[in-house]
Amino acid sequence: MKEYVMGNGAIGLAALAAGVNLVSGYPGTPSSEIVETIAKYPHEGVHVEWSVNEKAAMEVAAAAAYSGARTLVTMKQVGLNVASDPLMSLAYVGVKGGMVVVSADDPGPISSQTEQDTRRFAEFARIPVFDPASPEEAYEMIGDAYECSEKYRTPVLFRPTTRVDHAYAAIDFPEKTEPKPFEGFIKDSKKWVIFPRLSFANHAMMEKRNVEIGEEFSSYRYNTVEGTSEKAVVASGISYAYAKEFLKDYPDVRLIRIATPYPFPETFVKKALEGVTEVLCVEELSPYNEEQIAKLCGRNGITLTIRGKLTGDVPASGELSTNLLAGIFRKYLNLPEGEGAIDLSDAPALPMRPPVLCAGCPHRASFYAVKKAMQGRKCYFCGDIGCYTLGNAMPLDMCDTCLCMGAGITMAQGFHWTDKEGTAFAFVGDSTFFASGMTGVVNAVYNNAEMILCVLDNSTTAMTGHQPHPGTGRNMMGDIVEKVDIAAVLKGIGLTKVVTVNPLDLDASVKAVLECAALPGVKAIIFKSPCVAIVKPTGKCIVNENCINCGLCISEIGCPALIRVDGQTKIDRSLCSGCGLCSQICPMGAIEAEEVSR
Image (cartoon, rainbow, N blue to C red; front, side):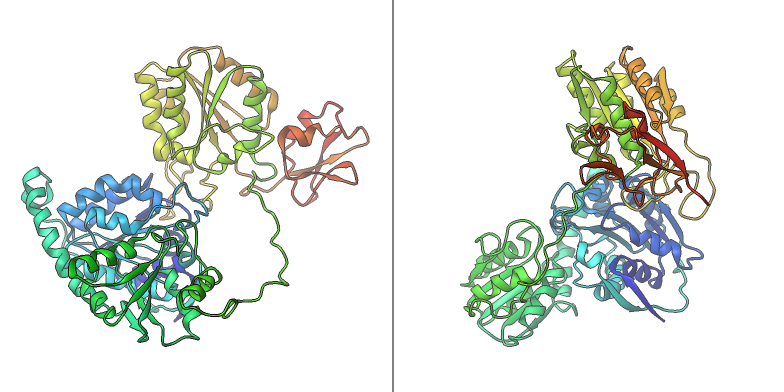
């Protein structure tokens, strides 16, 4: 049957079609929809879970792969950093069942901290990587990745990028899928227990094996060459689709496509470069192919002019696009200026859409309560990864640092130890607390640090699409499970002051902050209020005749529902959720709640 799905959906359906037995992952844009697609489609006999973080997901899948089961692990590229500890050892130990690890790269970056390149990680871990150029190819390649994994008993990386993940295509998907039968775990401590002696032997095996895989990849169906000119273009991933789009009008130009960057298909590339005098490498993130070709030419005495990121012909950072590459190709191929370009002269300018916390977001209220309580005091506000990173925007200005998931908690301790006069705050979401926050709290208690932990508990993983987590009481198998109580966890770690408060009650929230600030040691405030995107508003706020247009409500909290119309302060009813925070700020009592009629 035909299914019209995004690239992530194609990857999920391909895993089901390949007989996957276990799927684990941690939500992160641009990869989140893979697990959600599998959970949405019939998957009897397949275990599906959002793991507590990427490391846990990798380890759950590792045991299943040791048992011979086919597994899929999903994450975004920075999640691969979290999972790298088990992955690096898995590369040495190997697997029995096919294990495909999807690490979705994010050129731009659009929604990530880094522009890191999973192809580099594949080379670092010495494991194969597949690089699809479209949702259709991603669907086909998943099956190939499982075959490669099982043939060579190795985990395999799968590297789609944002535009492949979020593009849509019609996929031929079987009416019925079944998980593949597997043997089960066979005890063998010489194989499954990693020791230096095993690592030494397996490292040698891996290097020998990778030469063989590179040879096999040289005849892989998606490593292709078109055209016969002396000037060549080398592309991979979505950059190949962009190059193909422009070069369709120049069929003689040699277009070399590399779909399996590691192990590098040297035999294929050498043959494809025969008769070529100059090559332009177009790729996103890092100059991986460019460097591999330079090494290949150096080892084999091939004289070739190589252009790309390293020569400044292709941008060193950011996304590529058909239009951007059009200019690069025109220069490279000595084409007239403007030839092959799309005329956008009459296109309207894109609207400005700065990222901002939603109207009615409880995180805004939490930040504001801390800001009001600590006004005039020296403080350090350590942020984290999630919607609440947007607390850095004016007028809140409540996020001094943001490094990686869970780092805010441990960084607050660093600020305490270097400045004991200041008060260190750490803001963390409920999902991030479970993913990577608890160890930081243990560290603070163990080392007698002083800090105030603010858990912004909105009962969901909001930024990546409202996925469940251990505190929500449900999982991806549809089971109702015991909620993990954050307050109980904190008390179990050893905190003696844990306060839970509704952030939309401004006075109570300010009081809670002041109470904690007066105490020594590690304290925690759980600001608990559901995400405004998952609850229906019960009312709206209106501006009454008492308004003097002082603009205090706008300048204090920056809620997008508060606007100026012809010099008058108004509330945009289409955005207002009726949270009431603005009414608690107004000195004139000019904002009041209005019930929504059902």
